[in-house]
Length: 476
Image 1 (cartoon, rainbow, N blue to C red):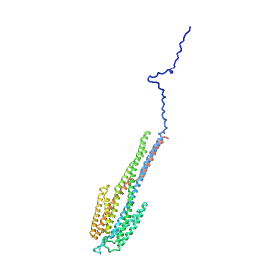
Image 2: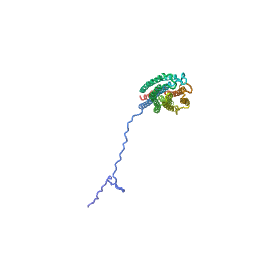
Image 3: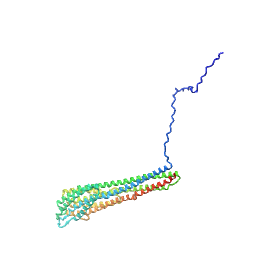
Image 4: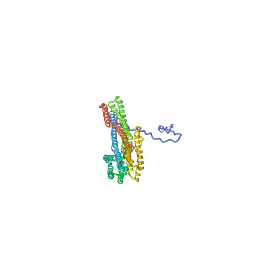
């Protein structure tokens, strides 16, 4: 009997079972397996605990104290040097040059006045005018000019100008001496009518003065005045910058010392470190006192320029212009009609300039205004005398005009100009004294500097080292 056998059943492994295709579409290709992100390798760090932290903190504290010390010490040296140079520029340069301008102009005025006196036209035996006063004053002014040029000659930077002044002064003296000699040979001449040759030589001397001496002296005075103004700005700027730097470095040093105190208290369970407390106090004192001192110095230097230097410079120029106007006035009286018109125009231009220079400035205080008013009143007397002189000259009353111009008394040019010039000198000296007072205060604001901050911060640095030493000893 034949037995039929069923075909063997093939078992499909599970892994070979086909997967059902999704109804939405064909099967997608298998994606790439996700990549694993590697964490960055840890960077090696220096351990900031223990002795290293103490050493780094101490070094930072010392650097901060050194920066504060440098700002205080170098700032003090710089500001004190700038104030000293400002004082030198004003007292030994600008003041001398301004005085030279006045002395030259007044020398010319006195030499011009010496040609005016003479004999009365109505009474030939009567001398009219005061020649002796003009000669004595001219001699004094000439000696002052020599001394002032000697003092200015100490500045090698202005040597060429000083030499040119000496050369021109020699020619001026020569023409003036010849004019006086010619005039003295006519001892019987009438007042106000010197010899024509004497007038010509006097005009030659005046041309040397106005075209060579006064322009160079004016340029020299303006140069020194500008140098003084530059020094004032530099000193004020230096003091302001020093105040800012001391304040900034002081705050940084104090912040670092206070942070270090807190860090030490947290890490070592100690409330205070006495040495660091003392160092912090020293830094605080230098910071506060330095900021206040430099700020006060900047304020005083600014006041020195505003209330002293600029008003004084204006009044010093007014003195020279006034003396030049007086010389022009004297020459007008003895010159001929053609030249007298030029002299009058020049006198009017100089007095208009004086009207501007004698006006009080915007920085003039209420206490100073009466002094300016006093100068203006006396200047008005001088102008009134000039008007009287003109009227007498126009009326042909020459003897009276000579008396008004050269005699000393109220209502006469010689006295009223002296009174006006003396009052103007006093006001200029007052402004110069204000300058000196403010510069002295600027120096006083930094009294003891830079020695005091240098010593205090050096002690603070030593205290920092003493303060960190016990903590370092704990790690041995």
